[in-house]
Image (cartoon, rainbow, N blue to C red; front, top):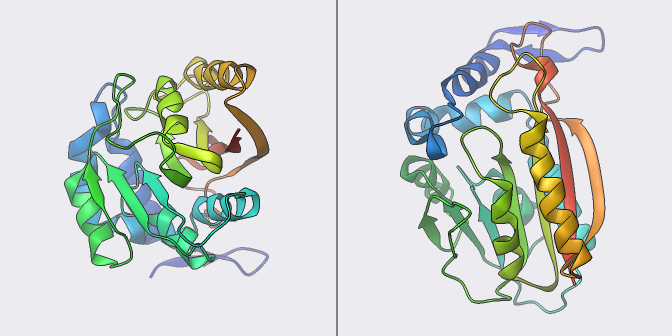
Length: 241
């Protein structure tokens, strides 16, 4: 592993940085679900993100467990756009006791998730604003959706469907990414759509914002990381009313 030590004794993992830079470079705004990109990088995905300390899974799981109101042991969770299952994996690590199902548009990514042996059902699906998920209303106690509201991924108009399948009192955690001005993949206008959709849902009494956090995606980056200044996330946790 090639590393460099900063003043605080922190080491940068240049190999993982390069893996993540290659993933981001392959993402195309107009390529629905970026199937080719994730197929190409599936086997090295965890090595890349975890090697530079992708902190969002811990944050997502912590928020979900903190605000989960539904009682009982038969809880269910769904990791949407799960990829290799990092969000669901961390949820279980932090004490969630029920089964976790996963959805992703890429079979190769789900194959990696299956090898972990911790998830229940796997669904390969590309989600669009017109998609109705094959789950009844009020199915899940926790719904997570990490890293999906960005270039070539989910549109904010998908959000109401995620609340439909969430139980009353359940928690939904997701993030939007504010890329820097030099990154043409996503504009602030794209992210503003999520605010409009969520404001409408709150006005209609469907959900309530419980917590939000603005943060860097990764904790272990060198100054040379190509996307260092462009990975500021807004993580939000909502409860379904």
